Length: 128
Image 1 (cartoon, rainbow, N blue to C red):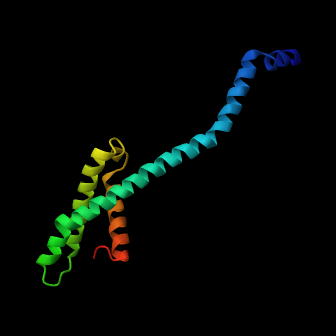
Image 2 (cartoon, one colour; image 1 turned 180 degrees about the vertical axis):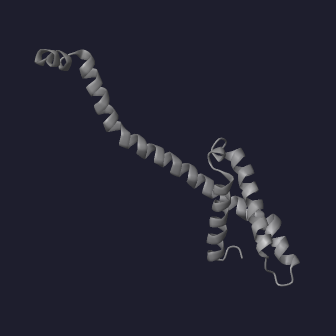
């Protein structure tokens, strides 16, 4: 039994397996960090495009709705409509500028991103 174990441990196949396992253990955290940086880069680009879509929506759609109302305030339904409009604009812009990336995020994620941008811009006084 001991002789069999010695032959296995000293075989080329065993050494190759051990080297492959050590390399995999060494590479795994680096691959995970790389994947995270790629995802964050995509998200950052998508966030930039969401800001473009919200600004475009504000200029083309939202501002006109607000001006048409006496009090200058959007109803909840109008605000929701503006967010949907911006999410559609984001999908269209991102499909042209980030092909393939937009498909990895669902419609709910795009709408949430648009809501996040609207909220941030309102807090900064950029939209209202």
